[in-house]
Amino acid sequence: MKLLVYRDTFCVHLGKKTLTPSKKIYNRSQTTARRMVECTFGILANKWRIFHRPIDVSIDFCDTIIKSCCVLYNFVRKRDGINFTDTAYKCPLQSVNIELHDRTKSAVNIRNYFATYFTYPQGSVPWQYNAL
Image (cartoon, rainbow, N blue to C red; front, side):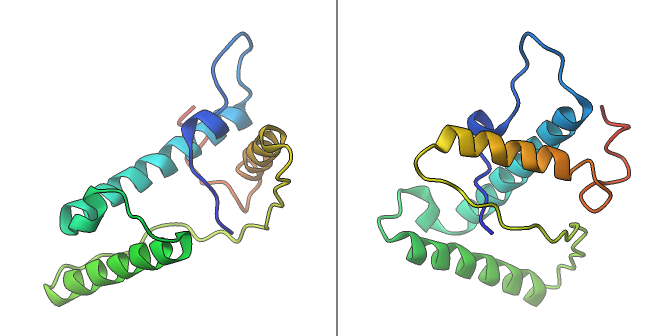
């Protein structure tokens, strides 16, 4: 499943009402994911010039370019003796169907789905309530 990590669409904005704990947890998870993507892309952009300009190719080919750069980056790190232990949690997520005719409603439904998911044992991390 591909999920767009985009602050303005998916984050629950602070406003008139107080956010529930599940929405606070969701916002923290969304912000962390966005920060990790930005950091990772920054590393790739510093390594390969192709990311310094718009990539004028199909989405599928762009996806292949990004994956290839990630593989090459990991190969170079391994070859140069830099050890890295992946500590990311692996949680199986169910597919979420997106209706093309109403993207705003779909975005809200997806946001609420993940906000709920992060409060269940299979989607939560031990420290998430301490960070609120």
